Image (tube, rainbow, N blue to C red; front, side, top):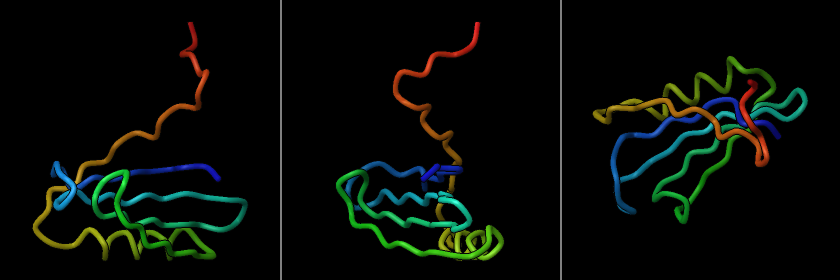
Length: 82
């Protein structure tokens, strides 16, 4: 499974932080909604198309939070080209 995008609501702390991830595995698209940081609780959604996944992401990010996109982490052992 490859992570394509990651958004964070800009808030710190277990009670306030929310993250949304977009991942792809073959021809299936996956959205993870996480509340509470790395140790938080996640809900997962699976779709046949990226458009369906993006519709869910837009709905999850509605509201007063200031969402920021974060870059996916490079694979372990990855070094930038020279």
